[in-house]
Length: 357
Image (tube, rainbow, N blue to C red; front, side, top):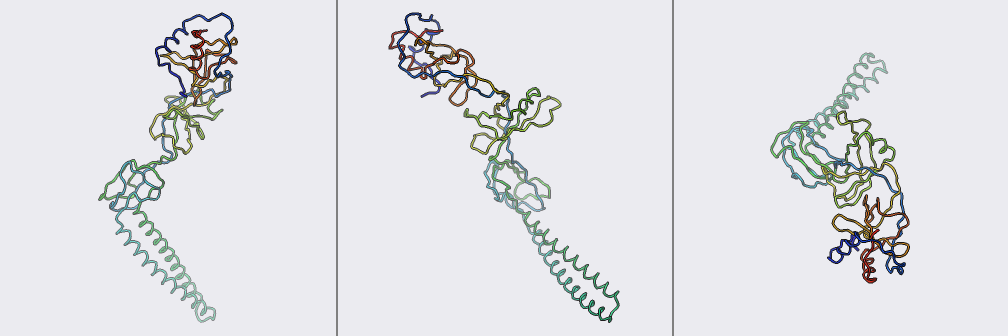
């Protein structure tokens, strides 16, 4: 069943127009209707205010060089999807590997020196204990051993640092996402701190909204918001964060709307409508399938207490899923036709035009 019934045929249009201009029939009560009706009842729903916001990626970064070298490989181009851990930039590593080998050689020499100094200290310690050498000789041996130990620790740190420099020649993606910009090309020489590539993740998004200061208190009180998706659906926010300061120029507050990880069709940079809860109210809601539309007029078929069917214009508010809020035109407890075509068929079979009240 269509969510909103549009009267397409000329006969249906004529009947609609006649309904909006005719006087109510005041003859004897009509027989019971033979179609499904819905009793209109109020429902508590959120009172909302909406503002535009801009979608952004939570994870977005520019990777920079941590060592110097020449760009050897750029496996991905702009707009390519990259898995976490994949190589996005590779440098030449001749200098780094050479430094690593030198550090390893220095470590071997420092280890040998320390071993020799330790042996000499132990031997001197034994001779001093037997009073064959002066204690000052032991102090000198201890100093040489301690110096050799410090040199050994320094050599170990040098090997670790040299290994890191080799690792820095391969840049990997910190998370899965889209490569948005390449700041270097193959063959270019780079220095530490120089930007290499930029990217962002589409798995976790958020929306930034500027909200007038007069509405901030209500947003903080209720802490709920929904984002209107491109297809018309609505996505509940995981969390809203109201920044604790206002923009000095606009006096508005920045509100960050955190979204759940889901396939939403949203992309960073898009503008979306965000509806924030500011309170609660009781409103009448009817199915969109019960509506009759013609040009700019929207109406429903109302079944009176005497079972007479009349076409009544209504004023609508928010739409949500397959329901719509009725702001004016209906009262609590009234019955409406669930399917306007069934109501129209009923009137045609009864040989009467729909009244208008």
